[in-house]
Image 1: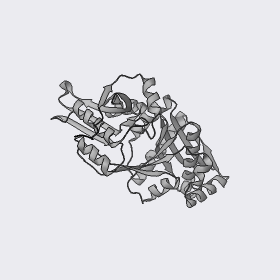
Image 2 (image 1 turned 180 degrees about the vertical axis):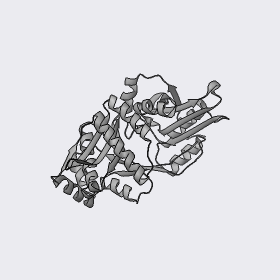
Image 3 (image 1 turned 60 degrees about the vertical axis):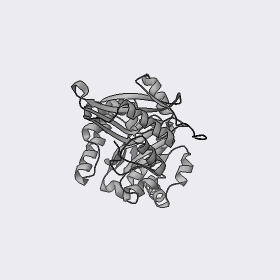
Image 4 (image 1 turned 135 degrees about the vertical axis):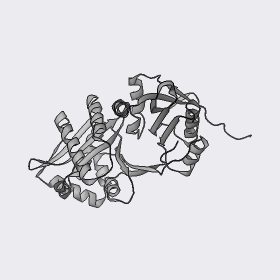
Length: 321
């Protein structure tokens, strides 16, 4: 029809970049998720029994994004599983609803729905009516509720970010910083990695919250430590560890992977100290976006704590096939 704009043409080229080329492009993207990073695939595939494939997305002949999928296949490829989790990663200037529809249409043509194939998508797009319609136009079917996480923008300087803290959060941070009994330690060593994971396992067992398995956390720690993309922080008081965090760096983004706090740590606001110090250290390393982790309800205590640091709740549409 006259006056209508033709939909963008999308092509996905698989396994055409070197690792350095992939990482260079990945680092140029804002809010690139952990699950789309190369280090994540290297760690997760042996644990989950999967293989990874890496794609360059072209829109109208121009490089527009990256996509990493994890696959499992049995002999003859009769049974085939495909996971595209929290992707694709759009490069600056791309990621509109039309681009999203064009990408998933191209993906559907390359890896169509069929008997014996199970596809799982967690699209990393805003949960808006326009984006949901784009996914439907591409033939995807909704299979679960929306996913939400909290991202912290690290572009502002430390003073500006501190001014954005919720007043109560800032007051508790100040108390922790003035507490001379507290010592913060960012020594990322095999010993502190083991200590963080052991504390996480004990805390998760005691409190019963969902989270990655110890086996997965250990694999991630091993891979990210090898590439100098792992940070482990601890707060100690009177020679006792009262809180720890483990952060994973991927491109210009970072993710809060695990953390735990003792009763004494909560009393002393040790996690306020760790998260604030995390943001300062990541900023110094040139990281621009900090994923503070998923939340189930934007009004529960965890969400209130994370947004108190200045984070923004980002909702995506959830699971599709």
